[in-house]
Length: 466
Image 1 (tube, one colour):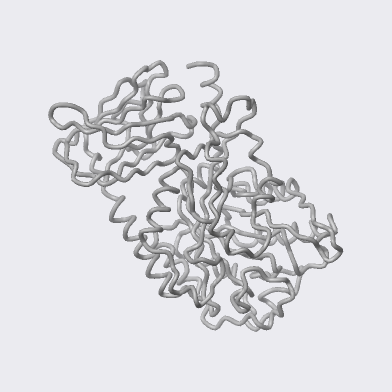
Image 2 (cartoon, helix red, strand yellow):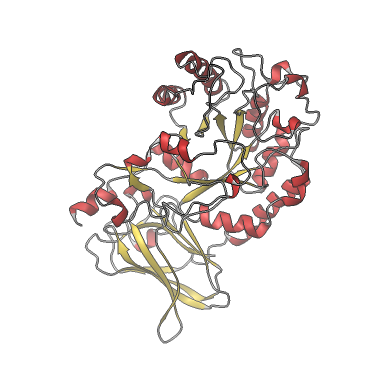
């Protein structure tokens, strides 16, 4: 192992990042006064009297998320319009002063407990209603007071999600957010919560279209933890084209070439976020524009199966429920996940490997809390599986033991055709999880995974075929 490789593999995730990454697939709920105005971005002048859902059902939300295979939900407790979905004592611009008059965040927190899924908070720093916005510390005090309520009264929070939207306050000045103060408060009140996008724990994939990089590295230059850069590339106006845009720059963030010249590196994994509909909030005319199952499975494979997580927005109807258009698609997606990725054909296989370290034998692969670790000086790393009978898989699933860093730079899967090894698929990074669709019709009992490029010895938790 070279000194440079030692440095690369010394960058490892925190426990909160490990917990966040294991969530893999979770929901976003955009709900508020925009449902009653038909807007995507409110201006803060909305009268709370318009907010009057008559069929709000957070149990239905969570039941649908569980059927989809999701493990959590993040709610827009306050969007840019400043309207609050919880019982806050710091403003009357909230659900408590609407005809509905109930704490929706509290209702969702109870539903999350009932259905055993995690709860996260989106609290927009931009507030187009509050008159203190643009006044510096006065607004930061208000924001931190609200953040304290959300992080103190609703149980354990797995994610605090901030975007970079920012504008001028009533005084014509742009609010300069005191990010470090926000972060310190979150660490104090919810030390297990990952701070995402405009935060030090999780980075934005860079678009809202659901596009994923071919090679998504978690070890990147520390300069990427740059909220001003996120703000500049975030949506600044209510722009439908922005939601479809896929940037073409920044496709290589963590290869050895990309890291050359960067002395300070961090573990900063990616989240892919998009909406099940064209908009983030509900619009009736988009009922017929719900993403297809094929499109959602493709995003799932490339996000969850591409070393990122998948945050999928499902906006409730103004009356407070998820429509059947969305519910049916979520159930279809969950059925696909369960059908396609639940029966590991290699679970009873005999594994051999080019090398292994003590207590990290190839037989430890596919265990709950064990892994195979190749020797650091292994010049031709591979692990092979004999299933004992012919199998015809559709997907390859790999997982690294990322507590030992991100190591795999390329891999090749082959099968034995009775005479020689035949290549099936090849790829680059693995990280937390890599899912690769396989060609139809290939049958073999023997399969081999080669790792020709690696940052020292590979460490794999999972080598599975489904």
